[in-house]
Image (cartoon, rainbow, N blue to C red):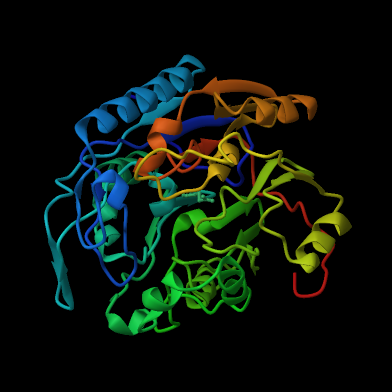
Amino acid sequence: METTKINSWNEWDTLKHVIVGRADGTMVQAPEPGVVRDWPEDGFPKGTYGPLPEEMVHIANEQLDNLVRILEGRGIRVDRPEVLDFSQSVSTPDWTHESMFGCMPPRDVLITLGNEVLEATMSYRSRWFEYLCYRPLLQRYFHEDPDMRWEAAPKPRLTEASYRPGFWDEFEHMTYEQRLERGKRFDLLLTEEEPLFDAADIMRFGKDLFVQPSMVTNRSGIKWLRKHLPNHRVHEFIFEDDYPLHIDATWIPLRPGLVLHCGKRKADPELVKFFHLNDWEIVEAVTPRRTNGPLPPLCFCSEWLAINLLSIDEKTICLEASEEAQAEQLSGLGFEIIPVPFWDVAPFGGGLHCATVDLYREGTMQDYFPRRYGRF
Ligand code: DAV
């Protein structure tokens, strides 16, 4: 029997065990207070919902399976989630929703913090039950690893009180600049009624965790994380973004002292100072290949999935295969690049980082930011 040990503190230590998602059964979810899809050109005008086309599922699964082969070829253990019937409607005592979503991006749902695996609250009704896809794995790890801590954040109510009334109508009519302004004030969709967060809004740098409030993470969610993790320092900060959704295509640590930044989403100057004070270099990522389109149909992520990468260790990076300029930039910084075709997975919820959750990386909790500064 394989022995299981849960241990991962950052994004770059040597990877030994990982979950890779599946594309099967993924839905364009039914409209809900947390998210509204509108893709008339691709067969899903506003108000409609249903499974993504079979052919797209097939190609995405081929790319996911290929990633699994690459990782296993390097001696990394890979586990996969259990696919549910995501077309079923789901209910709590507070509401009923016509569909679920899928289980391609485990990164949104789970985060490993040392020997703990934490299930995020999520903030879409369609994703409320997504943790169930990972329960067979988590139960197994719980029994196999005597030191594993299995935690779940409080399940949210997700009543109307969690969302600003009228937000989507306003948002639809806002310019890019107006959206940036609203984002800067964190005057977005979510209220502070209850803690809400997606795990993919957290970036792990050992003792320090950087979390952005977003369309799916509120300040109460960050406050809950801070209370839950007394041995970490949980920092909250905002990037200038018209639709902030997950931090893992914006602020990507590559190794101690080096972070890759999506320059289009300006970082808080205080955050930059804090990194520089601690001798971290911030490198602006090159322009992604798909900046002038097209993105795949039904894709709700941006061209910046180009930097949604998966580190195998602090010298080796899995990168989307067609992002050649990005590969060149990273090679220039001393990394070996493993090219992985992955753009067909994007409509299912993201890139290589989104599609994975690391469960074991060698190494221990380190303090990479010994010098304190301002509110950081
Ligand atoms: O387009 O920056 C990517 C991450 C989705 N999990 C974006 C979002």
